[in-house]
Amino acid sequence: MKKYFQFDELGTTYRREIIGGLTTFLSMAYILVVNPLTLSLNSVKDLPDALRMDYGAVFVATALAAAIGTILMGLIAKYPIALAPGMGLNAFFAYTVVLTYGIPWQTALTGVLLSGIIFVLLTMSGIREKIINAIPVELKYAVSAGIGLFITFVGFQNAGIIVNNDSVLVGLGDLTNGNTLLAVFGIILTVILLTKGIHAGIFIGMVITAMVGMIAGLIDMPGSIVGAVPSIEPTFGAAFEAFADPGEKLFSVQILVVILTFLFVAFFDTAGTLVGVATQAGLMKGNVLPRVGKGLFADSLAIVVGSILGTSTTTSYVESTAGVAAGARTGFASIVTGLLFFLSIFFFPLLSVVTSAVTAPALIIVGVLMVSSLKKIDWERFEVAVPAFFTLIAMPMTYSIATGIAVGFIFYPITMLVKGRMKEVHPIMYLLFAVFVLYFIFLV
Image (cartoon, rainbow, N blue to C red):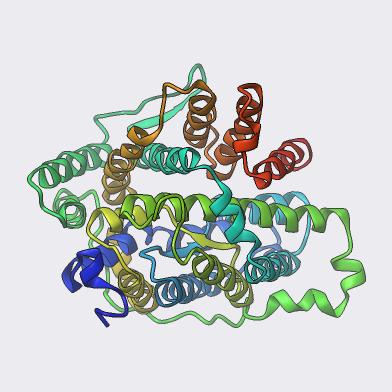
């Protein structure tokens, strides 16, 4: 096992991998609650039941899709990267495709399935791998740092430290709020632990923060440890129903837009996450990410599996950086995370203690670690500094990894062309320039 995952070469141990895998799981366990709430349109009142996906079935589908996808990533690509139904894409699925477009959720799942199949074909052809390897190293560093800023912003938001402000978009939250104070406590504790050189500081910080939250009455004690497993029957295989009448359900401009949106956002979210996590873990070899094709293949398969089980697009999670910060370096950590997702099906009541106040400190501190890649960018070269800066700043400002990549990749060919360095730009980057321009015109 140690030889297969190259423990010695990467300087890791079973203990570090297990703690890293557990930390990643705890950092993203919220998806087990949020995804079923989103896809069942729980926040929308007076909605016919036919438009809602079954909460219990989606919970099981979410856990299984995350478990299978993450284990595939660990075994095939050997990356410490976890997968689960993506935030943002699940909201697009529920509130835009189903609620606004009026497309049945079964047909929407078909759109996810088709985008996954296209992903598999693109990956097997090697096109996805060529695109990632064609990205300039400066932009890869910017993507990594941008994800760091993005995930820190998410952490501050989840903690209630940063809140909506109608006058200036965002502002300081209520620091007297109990859950916000709990998150602040977690941040301080985690900073102290990591400053002391404790590798498992992020994980230990989350555990102690959860315990303090329960003692203070901010987090409810779990009513039970083990719960009954809901039936997955309402969603399992529903993605195939549209093929019974494809002429009416699949051949329309709306469905095409849906499939392209799933395809585009998942493609570049995954590319950005792979590059960001691999950079932080020290897995990049020059400007090439080893085994990237296998990683993309695992990601593609996860989308197909997730759609069949009954959930929106499965993608690589930036929360994997929390596990890397805790010591994870290999796919063994992903297997640990995947097994925990399997077990979560039975221990769902226990997950109630992993609140946003508990996970927020981990996300915020991970951002500190990820922006270190900025030192590798030559900021003295304006033609490089502009697209790199736009890439990293657009991610948190637009709340989208894919949009941040799009903005930076549009400016890179422009600045390089004006500087007279057009021959240094890979032809694929010019193609991506055109694709991203069309994306902003027609899909945003």
